[in-house]
Length: 163
Image (cartoon, rainbow, N blue to C red; front, side):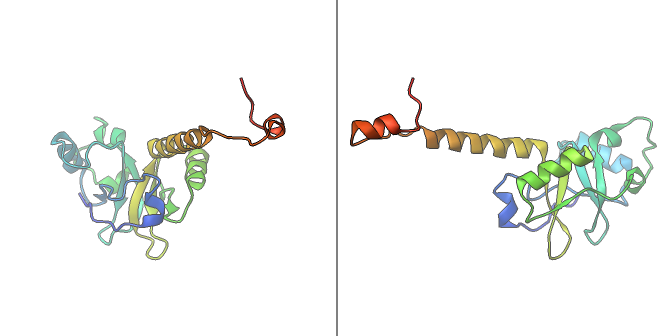
């Protein structure tokens, strides 16, 4: 399995995985099943980017597809691809990522370098929720401040609701 993409600072602060375990299209189902059964690093995810020998993203395949007992273990991973991957570039916003996931009904998106168009990360629904939770906590902390008024009039005209 390949785990050598580069890192882009803009997108990663949102919590996206910066070194996704990618799988080569030429590998077989059996190769991947053995890798998963050994619990090797990166083998616990639910979806994996599939790349060619140059690192170009070809698509995404889910763990369920790899582990489907009706699939011949000698089958190449590339045969599981149903079309091009829905992906986003590293300069996308969390809103862009969420919109793409909803529109295409997917739970993960490969993140591509804007310059090289190569895979540099993955973002999942869980990543989006974690980022949203952090924002809610930050907003809540910002509201928990004490406001002092120098006059009674300032207090009475304040937009802050008191219990």
